[in-house]
Structures are given as C-alpha cells and as structure tokens.
Length: 179
Image (spheres, rainbow, N blue to C red):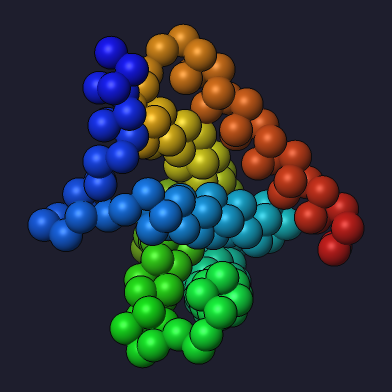
C-alpha cells in the first residue's frame, strides 16, 4: 500500500499530453494562489459603478504586473538554484508556470464586464467576483490532495475553509498595511 502511494506521488501530472512534474505543479499552484490573493486585494477596496471601467483596469493591471513580477522572481530564484544563467527555454517555462497569475483575473473581469453591459448591478458583480476568487483559493486544497494521492474527505473541506480564511486574513493585512 505504501509503495502504491509513493508511486502515485512520484507520477507526473498530465497537462494535456505533456507530463507536468511536481516542481512545475508546485510553481503553478504558487502562482495561482498568489495571483488570486492579489486580485482579491485589488477588488475589495474598489467600488464598482455602472459605467466605470476603472475596476476592470485595476484587476487586469494587477494580474499583468503580478504575472511579470512573479515570472521575473521565479526566474531569478531558479537561476540561483541552478547556479547559472537560465536558457531561453527555461525562461519561457517560467513564463508558462506564471500564467495562473493571469488566469486569476479572467473570471472577475468577465463578471465585472456584465455590470457594464447592464446584466448585473455593479455591486453584485463585484461581490460575485470576490466570492469567485475565494472559491478558487479554497478549491486548491482539492488539487493539493490529488497531488498527494489522497481522496477528498471532511478534512479536505475543513482545509478548504481554512485556506479561504487564511487568504482573507492575508488580504486584510495587505489592505491595512498599504491603504
């Protein structure tokens, strides 16, 4: 049983037809969580209005600037770990592993755009965007459990709630210290 579990843990994840190793999966999860936290931190202090595209620009700008910063920082860190300059292929891999930061903004931008189209009230769209980000963060517990070869359980749900609460606390801390 233990050897079966170990083989599950060492098996590469599949990303389409290309295997995704544990280090790349960890980098992408890190980018995903980091991006979602910063998008939530960008959303909360804003106030959406009927014709205001500012909140969409803030969310998109946060995602883009965080993507660039994350890819740069991860590239520098990988260069230090490797003890050499990264190749172009390795730098492109760092960009690819940072894409989850950008994906963090897609749903909020689409939801916020529905307010511009008049489909939702701006405050409702903003609340849905914020809740969506918290759900995305909480859902990472299920991905992490899968990476560990574990089945979801009641503890997984508790972990998801704890992760969402922790992320919210981080956002509150960021907002208190920076706004």
